[in-house]
Amino acid sequence: MTAPIEERIGGEQPLTPAPIGRTLGVARPAAWRLALASLLGAGTIGAAIGLMGTAAWLISRAAQHPSESTLAVAIVGVQFFGLSRGFFRYGERLVGHDAAFRVLAEQRVRFYRHLERLAPAGLPAFRSGDLLSRVVADVDSLQDLILRVIPPFAIAVLVGTITVGLVWVLLPTAALVLLVALVASATLVPWLTGTLARRDESDQAAIRGELTASVVDLIEGAPELAVYGANDAQLARISSSDRELTKVATAAASTAGIGLGLTTLLAGLAMWGTLMVGIPDVHSGRLAGVWLAVIALVPLAAFELVSGLPAATQTLQRSRRAAARLFAISDAPAPVPEPAITVAPPNRPVDLEIRSLWARYPGAPQPALRGIDLSVPQGKRVAIVGPSGAGKSTLASVLVDFLPIERGCVTLGGISLELLAETDVHSVIGLVGQDAHLFDTSLAENLRIGHRSATDAELSASLERVGLGDWLDELPEGLASEVGQYGARLSGGQRQRVAVARALLAQFPILVLDEPAEHLDLPAARALTDDLLNVTEGRSTILITHRLSGLESVDEVLVIEDGRVVERGTHDELVELGGMYASRWLHELNSGQGTSESLTTHVTGQALVGGTPERSSEAQLRERNRWV
Image (cartoon, rainbow, N blue to C red; front, side, top):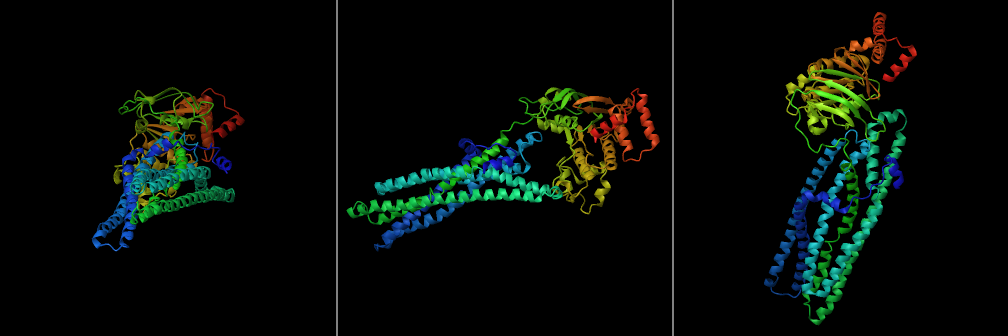
């Protein structure tokens, strides 16, 4: 069963369970709360044992028809133990769950922070659905560690010792019988169930992650699966994972039943054993008859101490597997490590300088950037163009600290990027990607991610700046309108404009726009690019695009190919040069825009004036196809 699952999760190697010490270390932040919960739990079990023992003595003594005053203390004791048991149990659950929720909150924040450090270059190793399972279901498994593993063992040791001591005072041989039965129940039975659980539940976390990933793929990729007729195959994959998870759950239930059965058997043997050694002592007069019921019934109550230990060992195995999957994330090195010593971020205005920049993706054999040079003083607008795979988005990733610098230098206001904390870099450079995420909430809440304290007037003004003012006025609920999952209720252009408006609210000194018009048709892309260039006038802006429409207004254009700058200059200079840029621009003019013959002739003439022979039609066609 292991091999198919590991193959389906992308060849991931089976994770060995996390060390017990490290797994238990997850609970360290709530240590004192766990100690208090264990004491309250000990009080609960102690009250149950006291209730059983006192009730047994009271019934036995009442059968002798003593005076009512003789039974008064025992009657009060029964009432006390009965009430205190409920209070102790309530306190244990209250404190224990408080500790668990605090630990879960701390762990989730910790893992989310590390995921932020890993994104985006470090996340392809994890499928989105499996990653969701790790951060939700596997973190939830740590709750069982805190509630069902640590306290039961602590309570068993504490109360078990006291109980055996009290029975020893009454009858040492009975105490020995009880001790042997408790030790066997607290060691041998949990060892057996733990061994079975290690075998049965070895793949539970991986199967659950695979099932979650498959369901997420089905939901998010439903249209594509339907188009390619792959719905049945995906449903079959989900059903297979579900059947395997059911097998694991059935095996786990069987293991729990074995543990409970053995514990019940030992409890019965302990009771009969104490009777066997107690009856002769009653006959000989060494033990009063009223105490015989006490030493016989106390073991039944005492075994509540160890009844949960077999299940606790199963839970421990499950938690170790879940912890291993979580540690695989937290131990994954961030693509860009935090500097050992950081400096304060630069004061505004901020100039950006890139000198001889080389960079590569983790594990890639070849660099994605090769010696890039660029100067962006405050207010300058630069366009980065080139064919797909040329390294344009890689440059954006380096600037926002998503990828490390292999060689060269990037400075912000004269300070090396490698000396700044990631949060400081993100406060200076804002990135609007081609797939900017919109959350399934209101338009206002999506915008306030850029500026939490922004007023409605500021939000409206920001939308007005990116050309969405009239659209906002037409919305019945205005800023309170829901955008849907991933902004599904908005068009592609509207989603990108909202993302830019959000970035403008954040007041980044430097704004990087990575293919903002990627998914739009040519007229919509031209309109969006024109609006973005208008709204960013006076702000340092790097526009990454493979479309050349509207670049006449930028201060400098860099043409990148294979990670190198092959052409640079203004729009007019590059058109006159007659190279890659001019060829692509001519192609855009002739495709889908109804360009007049005279305009085409003008462009061709400009290319010839620069002294560069016009390329052959076949060479131009090959070059245009590379940019598409």
